[in-house]
Length: 368
Image 1 (cartoon, rainbow, N blue to C red):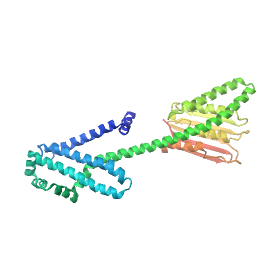
Image 2 (image 1 turned 180 degrees about the horizontal axis):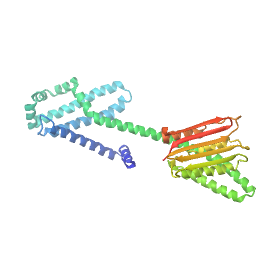
Image 3 (image 1 turned 120 degrees about the horizontal axis):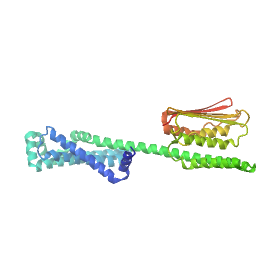
Image 4 (image 1 turned 45 degrees about the vertical axis):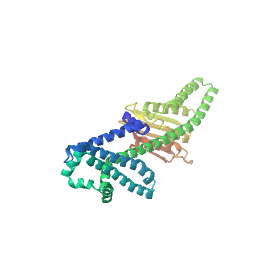
């Protein structure tokens, strides 16, 4: 699938692939015209006109297609330059009719067998081609029949061109949204890590001063693992549930150093540990819990994670000071909401509520 998408992208970035693709399309169109000229009740079937008319159709369609889709439409009609665009459309029809009429005139007046067979089986059209050349062009333009034929011939290549342009624009918009989300994600990491690092280093300093060297060493090791993860492993689109849970455990252990009375309960139940999810997906909610938890007896942070049958359900609750306002829509949770929408669409949901002195965060999404 990726190989096909890479080849598709090359048609926009490498002119060689683009030219080859266009030539292949017109070759297929030529073979189609030739085939139908051969099997249909064409009055000139069996003469050189069978393939010459296919060449004529391709030449007319190519001129009409490229002049319309690469010049008139993008430079005038798409920019709402209606007067110039309408004038050019009229000139475009005349020019296309001129090319088509000239090809008809050359085929049936220079190819003797073609002209004789046309005169035998379609004398009216043969006589029409014997008129003054300008009359032939004028009749084709003024009656509207040629314009209708041109629209029919252009329908397939124009539909492909419009579809490709729409698809490309959609991909560019999605890529832009992804890039913006990644910028927000990187900004979030840059905001979280310095503050968290400052607090953790202070805690390690306190452990060293208290000569709790083994605990200080374990904390440094845990901090090193946490920083290594956030720096080097969060660049992937998805990481395993096992790694995400280990990150949360390390973060909890590091944050517990500054808690005196509040307790943390961390529960994980999963039928697999290789489920994939976006990196640091749960960190904003966990950080929010530690940020607003009141550090007193009876206060708790309860983290409950369940992953069964391709469904992830998370709840994080903490006690907070009801007299203070919790910012439930900070940059972290806003980023979380956008990442959920980007990665899961309608297959994910989250809620945050506060009642009495308990703040509750819930998340539910499908995981692979």
